[in-house]
Image (cartoon, rainbow, N blue to C red; front, side, top):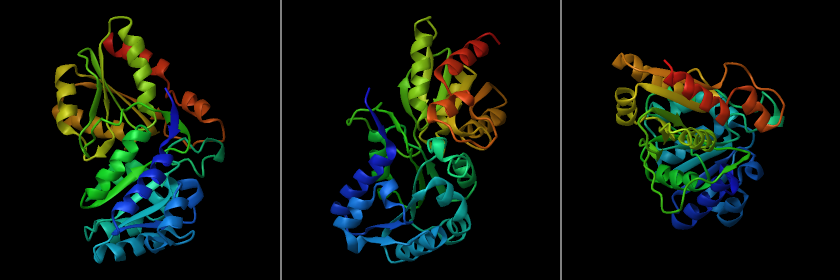
Length: 310
């Protein structure tokens, strides 16, 4: 399979949306080269604002544009767009229910050699606790473009997270995506794996390895962690009761926590969480950082065997 960073989709889809809709605006935080919005700025300068290295101001500008009927997209790095601007996102976007989108590249461990200061492992957990916020991480280039377009049509605040590094292409252009609805990549009754973002391709390798042994694991791309696809999660908990979650995010308060909350409420099922092990990152190649945190197909495979032996 070919590999592309999902931030490439950010640039390509926003360029397409800018051509189709004059109500679409980008508020850049001086990282247009990294976030791939330079072409948009060059082609549609009247729909582009560079707020500089000032994420709080960018969110405020976006909120103001939203009150006039525009559909603004704040574009920056995940570590800054989620945490430096979190007060403004809460107070100026979510509380008044404004139609602002936050598009953030460099999510999770994909900043790799940039180190802990740029590796954002807390963002989805922080933002999913804010009322009226929708939180999404696409799995590949194609799904990223489709979910950006879905966000543009969605009324309300949306946070979308993208990778700096290239990830494997999984989906075909004909595949459909709905905010809040998981995509089933593999059916199975023995156990269920929920993954999102760059970990979906990794989980898919584990599912293939398990299938060779006659173990049928279901795999869902849980691209939206808020609102979570509750019916999908409930069905998995009731049917197999054996769940693995995989995410490029702290195992606390991300996808794994969201699934565990539902299992606790149902009083049924066992959930094993694979993800960043509640510590800061460090400078290293992306694949090595994943390995250090057990975010590998081999660990998913062994965790599945452990679950099935319980």
